[in-house]
Length: 264
Image 1: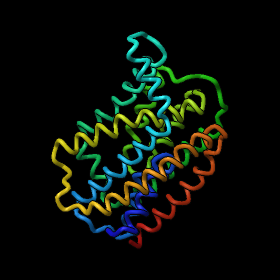
Image 2: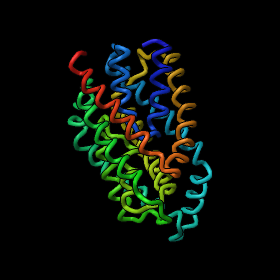
Image 3: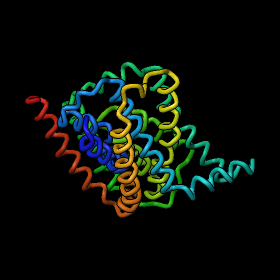
Image 4: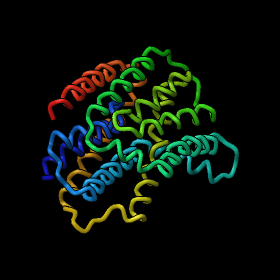
């Protein structure tokens, strides 16, 4: 992997983490197209760094919300902030359980099978199309909703199923306000990303011994900047009901990936 590849993959991760087109699916396709021949450990480290960058961009965009939530929690009252935090925790449980007990099975889907990625992108397209047709409401995310959205997030751990697309679509289909659905979707993933990074570091699955820090740094910057742009843009798009355009995009990329799998 060279610097140009790192920038490309960083931009891909930054935009697709927030836009409902599956960051993991696009990274798998991107690695195949770019002919990524890096060692598994180095590839995993690079992926972790890119996810760390997009998590930081989420924190920057929602910094006021996060500060308000933390301040509310330390009031030790059953207020809106404490309730929101409980919903975030509940939404994390399905993905945590999948990550703990089915990690090896999950990893088997990340072996460069772009046909599978293509099929999952088409499923993402269907979810986005259905959500785009839903009417906007003022309904907040309930505790029950947070659990169901958490299940959608767990399913979105498969490459090709967009995490933001699945969680936002599920939330909207449950009748929740579109802007609140996007806010909840982006904030609910931050603890999971940091938890996954901590787990990989503590378990020794990733190492920096053979890593090219320059390439890693360039990828981080590219993912962080593009993540800031995409996160802000996505909130506006969801509010304006523009998800159908991403639905069309996912169908096109999904079909191309399936067809390409026969020739790669």
